[in-house]
Amino acid sequence: MRVDVFTIFPDYLAPLELSLIGKARGTGALDLRATDLRDFTHDVHRTVDDTPYGGGPGMVMRPEPWGQALDTVLTPSSLLLVPSPAGRRFDQAMAHELALEEHLVFACGRYEGIDQRVLSHASGVCRVQEVSLGDYVLFGGEVAVLVVLEAVTRLLPGVLGNADSLLEESHAAGLLEAPMYTKPAEWRGHGVPEILRSGDHAKIARWRRDQALLRTAQQRPDLLKQCYDTLDKRDLATL
Ligand SMILES: COC(=O)COc1cccc(COC(=O)c2cn[nH]c2)c1
Image 1 (cartoon, rainbow, N blue to C red):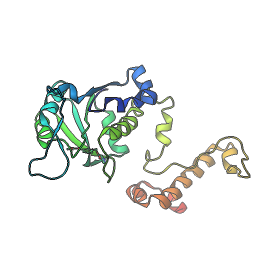
Image 2: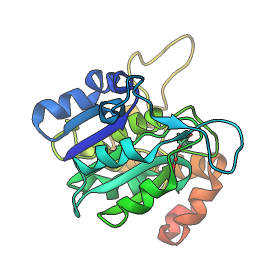
Image 3: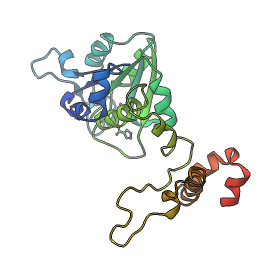
Image 4: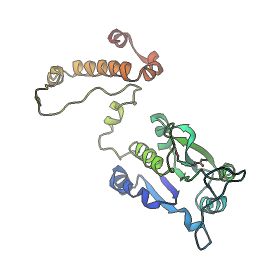
């Protein structure tokens, strides 16, 4: 997968080298390029923003630098993602969708946002999707790119050592994950649920499923509602 990120803070994406993404780049699963939007300005101050038409506080990102920057990468098979409070809510399902894409382009907005004509123009070339991490406002889209790219990259083939962990993790089967334990068996007076040390894999699987159901019912009843019709009689007996 090829990923292009345009931002006025390209160094912001340096942490991606450290995490799994550095590994994914090593395996060739991910070809990531961060480009400074100011490279597409032509004035001495490398200006990327200006005052909003219609007045109001703050500044808006000018269309020209964005137009020239996106011209260098967008093709009909690209998906342009714009982190924004107004976007589609990012979740594991969307992460799986994005992991199937061949070319993602992120436009990191700052200030009050990007001139709307940039998105309108781009939608004549490729698919454009505003994406939201949640109902709050950040200084810019860079943080969202770190989150989206980590969630997507770990789904790429060959990136996670043990692909099975993708199946068990929270939000994979729609339920939260069961609690996990490791050595020592006794720690500050706290033991480990006996069943996990029984070696009876069928019972352990059942216990984990029950814990996942109970945990989801308690912490995220909204998720339980979503996957209710996938539950079998044994599951319902637990609830
Ligand atoms: C058309 O879209 C734009 O212009 C986007 O512009 C901006 C402006 C300021 C901040 C951001 C970053 O996104 C968020 O704050 C955000 C994402 N998820 N939840 C909060 C983006």
